[in-house]
Structures are given as C-alpha cells and as structure tokens.
Amino acid sequence: MARPLILAKGFREHDFISLMKKEPHKRNSFRLLAMHHIQSGKSLVEVSKIVQVHWQTVQSWLKRFDEDGFNGINESQRSGAPRKISPSKEKIISDKIKILSASKTGGHITGKELQQILSKEHNVNCSLKTVYNTLSRLGFSWITSRSMHPKSNQEVQNSYKKTLPSC
Image (tube, rainbow, N blue to C red):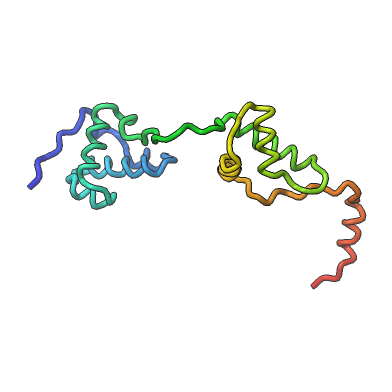
C-alpha cells in the first residue's frame, strides 16, 4: 500500500473543480483535475491513470503546487525563438489588412505586399513564411474578401437579384 500523501496546508480548502471549469488552458485544467482527485483521497497512481500521465508527473505537479501555489501548476513558457512579430504588431497588421482589403479596388492583398508593409512601416524584417504563419494565427487565409469593383452599382445588382427566377 502506498504511503499517504502529505499535502500543503490549506490544500483541501480549494475548489479545484470550479477552477478547472473556468480555466481556458486545457493543460492547466488537467492539472486542476488531478489536484481534485488527490484532494478526494486517490493515490498518485490512480490519479495518473485518470489524467493519463505518469504518476511521477502528477507528483511533480503536486510538489510545484506546494511550493508556488496555483502559479506552480500553470503551464510554463515553452522554449524556442521569440516571435518576429509581437502580439501588439499583430493587432496592427490585422487592422491594416482589413482596411486594405476594403479599400483596394479589384484584387487581393498578397503575402509579398504585407511583407513589404511590415518592412517599411514597422521595421519588421521577416520571411514570407513568417508572414503566412502570422496570417494563419490571426485567422486570415490566402482567400481575402473581394473588394467592390469601382464601376459597380448596388442598386442595379439588387434589381437584378429581384428578377432572377426562384429555383
């Protein structure tokens, strides 16, 4: 039989289930679920089977929670190169694309054009791949909204739609 867990002071007073339901990050919600099961008296092995990780992983989550509280079980920042385009510039880019897409007559905005805008206006020198990855992250695709033709007439279009036979 496994030894009983020694839990931090006040561990049993937390409502991990309600915190888990409010947590937007899925990895953090799994950790909160594990803490709930530990709180209910299950062993590390039982909890590890429920959340489908190794029991030592659950033990490390518990240790980090004991040391740092809720900050200890939150997802830590991943390693890797920092983004070339910061989140604040991503917002500017998103707004700029929407403005350009609405104002440009006939056609669409290309990745090459956006790369040039980033270089000239924001001093961001990045590859075309970075531009397309950023567009994807912002929810844009290679298909942009079609702009209005300069000779289009909305009244004529509406009257034409009314004369179409219904199927």
